[in-house]
Length: 195
Image 1 (cartoon, rainbow, N blue to C red):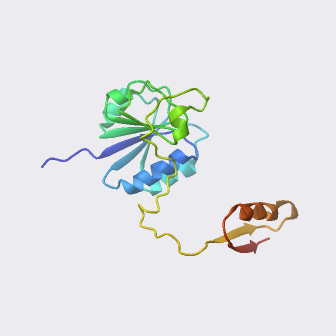
Image 2: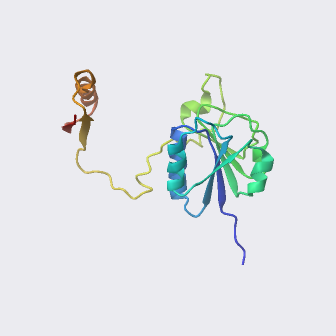
Image 3: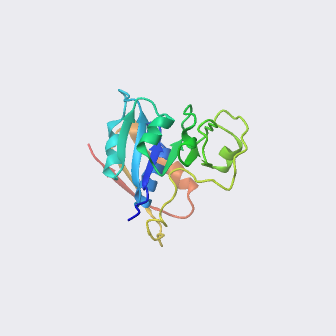
């Protein structure tokens, strides 16, 4: 019996970001794959909530001293996705590699395909230097996955709810008025004060 390699490696930074939400969506949607998240070094500032979150959705979280082509080859994945990572040469020469560019573009991984997060990031990097990435491959971070998760569009206005301590200096009334002034139509509002 032939068994296809179904291991997918994600390499990203340790922070709460659109990239992390995108990884979470991919882990859930690509359930036929076994997902490995590689972090470089064990940073003392590592957010344990990020690790627990990734593990809770079924990803395997691994720490390596340095992410190199040899480390990737040892894992023997079907593919790698690099999320805005710089300074990791030749990873894309080991296995098919997708580079997800979030304002950073690094040519040295030797990736197979580059996906940008916006039309703007196809033309400019985060330092306002010109780029020439393919605008046909744009996938925004934290994509709206309502359709993928079979959620129906709401047929009526949503309710805007705010939970507040009621403290005078933290009462979000001006924020709420500003928000409502920018929305189309009427919206229900709900306040819950707690002390």
